[in-house]
Length: 139
Image (cartoon, rainbow, N blue to C red; front, top):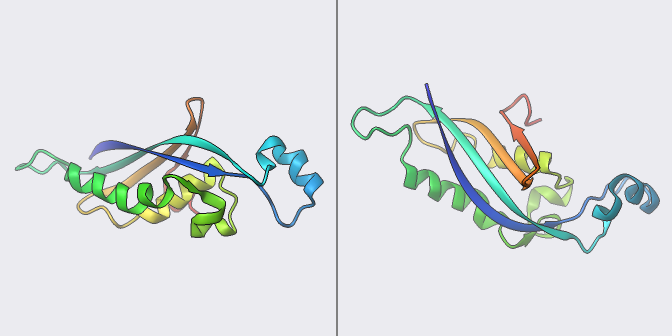
């Protein structure tokens, strides 16, 4: 099996807030990230798929099709959006780096022809990223 990784980028705003907690508890746990006005990040997404190399094309997956899927399923939904306010899954889910990776997994799983989704990696900052490897991580 060969693994192929494609990158995409999106910019989004978010805040961390647990409705079950008081304002004081949210501020204690999440610090400045609990500001309900939000703050933004330039995210980098890496999607790794696995499969066999097609002997005719030499590809594991059609690269343009993979780019189009990432654009349709993730970038067009998350880019220049306030995740808490505009993306359905984050109306009730705190948009941490971990939860963003899991949500992207759910958005992509089963939608990439002729390849199996292996890993979703989301960089919130150059020194902070989360990996999701599938159902065992995707709750």
